[in-house]
Length: 203
Image (cartoon, rainbow, N blue to C red):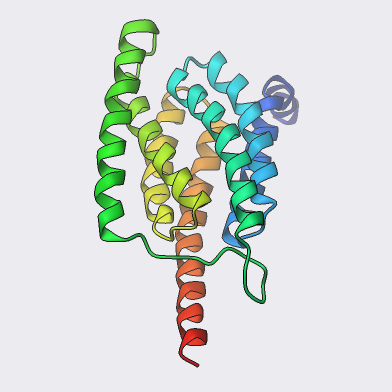
């Protein structure tokens, strides 16, 4: 049993390391620590390899996007830091922005779906495109510190965990179940922080 586990571990070391870094990435995100971004960048680089090997092409492209958005988020969180805790403040997503984000998600979904069906051998193009489009929008919201991005992640992470079981990416499936729980915790923590900001404003 132990030998089988060690053999699997060695055979999937990139995926396992990516999963470990992925958990650290979420922990840093919940704590609003700027280390979110370098950790996320390293995680994404590793998962480019994992998803390419598993033919999750949309998710592979998503990891490339994560590398770019990690650099952007890193810069934005450092540049926009304010207040006693030297952080970018958490904020609610305005209603007018929700409309723009919804339109962006639909457009991204159909673009990715077209690419996957037309140019790849993906066997889950509809589901892969769906989670990828939502993830692109949610990560941008994280970079801008919109609190509701956590709610999108709860859905995406749970849905993705089922996909990864289907593709036998067990470490990643477990990671995304953990992500689901942590996203719920993240929403609670950020909401508490936002309420604290409001109290300070009126104190």
